[in-house]
Amino acid sequence: MAFDIAEFPPSGYAFYMFNFRSREKTVPGASDLLLSEIVRTAQEQGKRAINLGLGIHPGVIFFKKKWGGRPFLELRSVSYEPSPSAFPESLLSKL
View 1 (cartoon, rainbow, N blue to C red):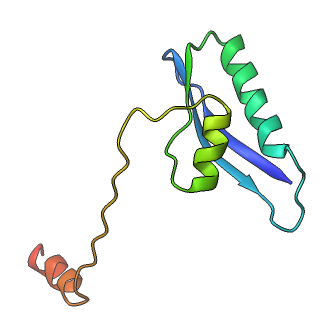
View 2: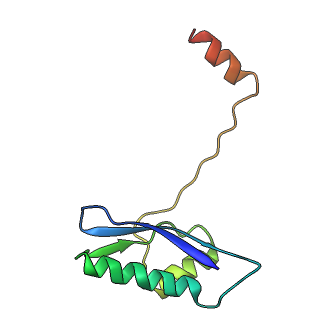
């Protein structure tokens, strides 16, 4: 079992946003079948490209490269953890 979420904005591209698949009830090739339908829909709508999103994991990178995806931006991430007391104090200061 699997499903995809894609966006087809009025611009010249489609955006492949998410792919979800069951770990318990796997169907080999389900993700490929779903992406092929997104490609078909994008072509029918005259889209020139599909943004496959970020390659956040080696498996995701492999899947997107298999479909002809190529990175065009460098991936960077940042994490921030405020101190527990900072949040309530910042809210109170705004009152």
